[in-house]
Image 1 (tube, rainbow, N blue to C red):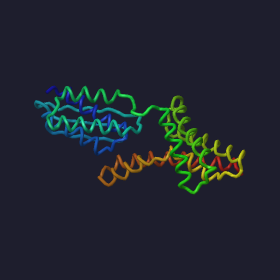
Image 2: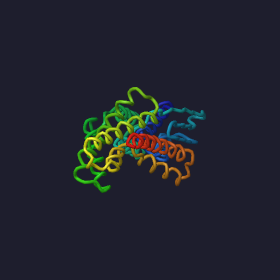
Image 3: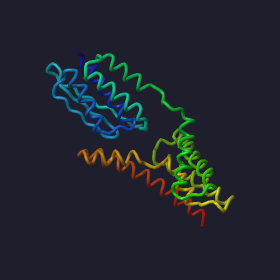
Image 4: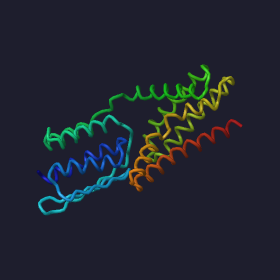
Length: 249
């Protein structure tokens, strides 16, 4: 097998997993399994939330390459599909060329759920969470609209602001101001409930879970990096909420 094709396949599989919300240990393990199944020796892989490094030996020559993953999102369907392709290659049911083409299709594939459906789902989740937090039926619709506002503004600000922290801060601030406007117009609404529901789309639940998983697995660099990322998100939400409360005084 061509060493370059093995390297391209491994890195593409790792990149798909890492930039779509997969754990770093899973990324490293997948690349190593593919490289060993392709007949490579001395396989070593390393992944952090922003970069992947893979090295192996083929025909007496060492090969090493690194790729960066500056932009990340959550698409666990692509992680599952990439995991399935890697297992099929390791078991011998498909060739390396077929695996590489499948990885390309997964990488270029569109999300299973369209954007409009994701926005509606975010709004429904915000409304449901506000009810779980003790809100009344009157709080339901404003909470849905606040969550919808946050998710829509998140997509809008990502087009102009390249820094994740400021994107999340602006979205949280807009959602908080929307909740404040609702309470100003309808004083019978509960402001704290609306705020909780509005911020739900920004909660870094997967980042915290992956951080703890990496720390427990001994990947301290990846765990701390993901933890810092989750902390910055929580900080942006907290600052935006504090500013909204200041306006309410």
